[in-house]
Length: 214
Image 1 (cartoon, rainbow, N blue to C red):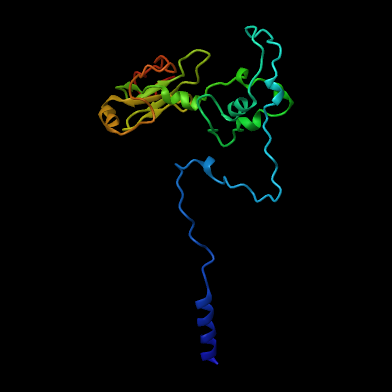
Image 2 (cartoon, helix red, strand yellow):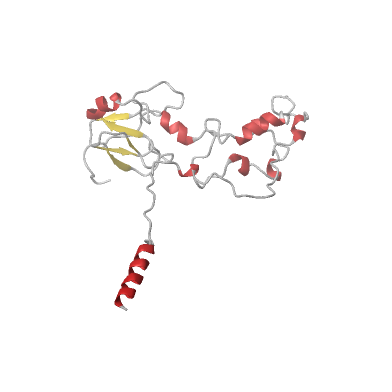
């Protein structure tokens, strides 16, 4: 009887598998926008229709636009519509609507895409700003001050890396780390002015000490 019980226990333990399986590791540096790009298996997928109307190819009144008739090539207009910004082809936030989905409906019917507002993507423009070098361990940034700035915050620059403002993204770095940063094969911000038209004046102020009265 006991031998039969022992054989049953041994058989059940051999067939037992753990309920919890170790999860695959992941990296936070991988863009979340690249996940789940595979679409659902739809047996009757909708046909993709261009949003730019073919009627835009017919010249219409200039409506004050330098007396030129308003018209556009539908294919060229569709390519412009699919670009998220003139300096960025895709979205840069998980909650952001792609331009090709946002610019739909009657609001954009009979509209020349070339004359639509196309603001530059700030995520690309901020990385054209050169590093602000300082000899202080703590710097302050208020976005330039005035009504167009942001609340004043303090940024530590004691680590051998480029420290950025959490509001506007402007880069700062300590002078003692200049040699190390210049030895790197690439950095996310230029280490010196490049003459790009997107560069702004260095109007951010450096604190005289630590976290004194603000």
